[in-house]
Image (cartoon, rainbow, N blue to C red; front, side):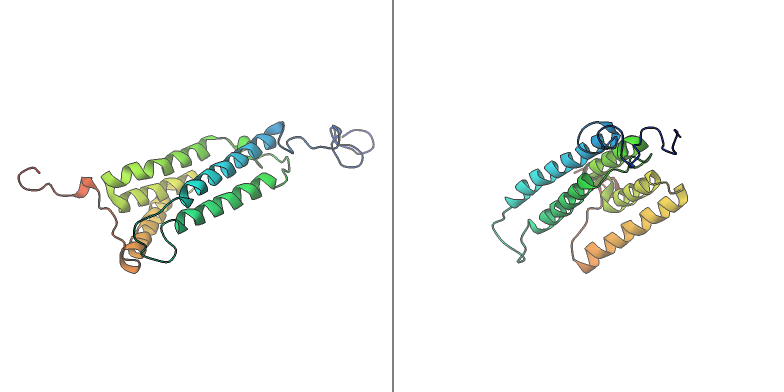
Length: 184
């Protein structure tokens, strides 16, 4: 502390000495500014996905909402979340932005979600969903046994929901399909 009980870098009125702007606030410099660009980029991706989803059309309509209802709902949630996080004031506290806690876990989570569509045809829905949820739980700090239990429970619940409640068949996976006689 400096004389007069004021911390270094903080003016007498409680604001920062650099023009009254705290480091990291706004779209510019600092770790918080970099985090804001991530959320702005996510909003742009959401808008692009919404543009693409708006064009979904099929020759037959099985329900009133049509094929674009679920993608548009996901886009709306992503857009609302990214805008809210981009506009949220950055406190400047350690660990309050993604740049300060590391980029490894978010990148691993993104890679995990990007791998799901490639794994489902081979491993099936149950194994892929269970593994993905267990992996995500471990990234969030759960111990292995709890992560596996949670992943299995979520996979079973989703399977029951889709297959029995909604009547949507889910892929079994090529790994678990028995070979046909004659090698075909």
